[in-house]
Image (cartoon, rainbow, N blue to C red; front, side, top):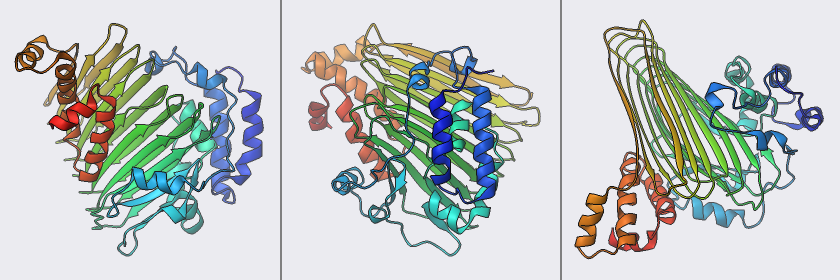
Length: 441
């Protein structure tokens, strides 16, 4: 049992649940109520739980968050959005403090029966399409339960069979209000042989602490191809909790890119279940932390059926007194013969006070498989550093070039050029001597 639910949460739920998206739908009201009861039973995760052993969220649990914001469309937001998503060929949906901003959003022409829009609009126009995605999913922890209970606006992408959206779609979530807790709910349903590239970008422009607690559910149909990229660049004092839950059908392909740069504390959980034959999953990640930042990535890949393939590559750069956590679990179930899976986590520590807890895991219940995993933790290699110094490059720049080479390897795997360019600028801004490196590239 959990500790008693704070009084402010009871009061907030009673006050705001009738004003949240889909409040008029009986099935969603029941789902919210059931989720809040689940939260009361589970509470916020504690370090006594194995999956949360190295990530203490007590600070989040103790804060009296508020759950709605009157501010959703400030005059200067348009300038910020255009700076963050300058490419006019890229579709975008913009959310501010948990509210969709239609005037700043643009969606390319869509094939018949396809839908790209806000959750609020989807619940109004096609609630039956979302009932199974929202109401029939049991929350796996207290944060997931809170997301359903306080479910705010997010994006919905529904693709009929054989539908291809070639231009990437950027889902931009902005927060500029201290003390606010936002619970975006997003879903992608890609039917057979459909294809899309979705970018979730979280940016904080608030001075004080706020909380983003996001859930994204993805279903890839037979032979569908979904590329999903998360860019977490929250404000320095923010808290960011995210769960991406994926279900893969026959011969589907799911590619995930997760980049974590911001926030005082962030945790991203990505789970995918390859529940039919010939499914393919690739999970890529990069985290870059300094000062006292805490960044946590948990992943789980379930191979249920034969001939599945999965690849997982995560890298971390930790400076200052930052703390990184990586836990990657691959489970090969009994029926998943001829599974081919590989997992790796490489970490670069730039200071004596930086630390990483890394735990790649393989759990194999089949006997005809090819499975490997590994992890490394180290500092900059002195041999290439000496080589660069011998070529007349001063030590600070040489170190920065080696750091850049380490992080760039993950960047090059992103298949969306506009996103690669955005990430390049972000990484150069975080890399020591980034401006000088820019001139050498």
